[in-house]
Image (cartoon, rainbow, N blue to C red; front, side, top):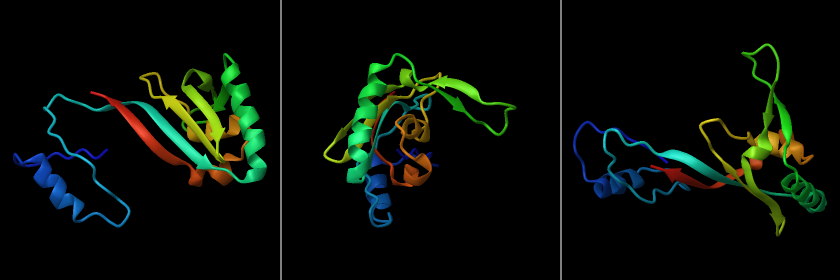
Length: 145
């Protein structure tokens, strides 16, 4: 989502057309709408995916099933600005997770209280987030207006 504040009233479709012509290859603008001054778009769900090597798929699928069966998955969240790690139950945020056709897919909630970090989800499945994080793709975002 790209939110622009314009200096003058413009037709959203015209702005979209002009901007789309200037986008780098691979970036596609899909729609435009005018928001009222007080309107905000707040993300409520995000879907992520990562293609896994065949040797990781079986273990990731089993770990994903175990993850979803648990009531709680607590991780230590490190923040350099804090003296020590903070305990966060990331299970509260992960709505679904599984492996399908060699791809790990999960959907997580975005709430005012927070969300799970992508690396935390990977680590909780026993996957090396340091090696895989750069390959995770955000597939979809759902917004509440």
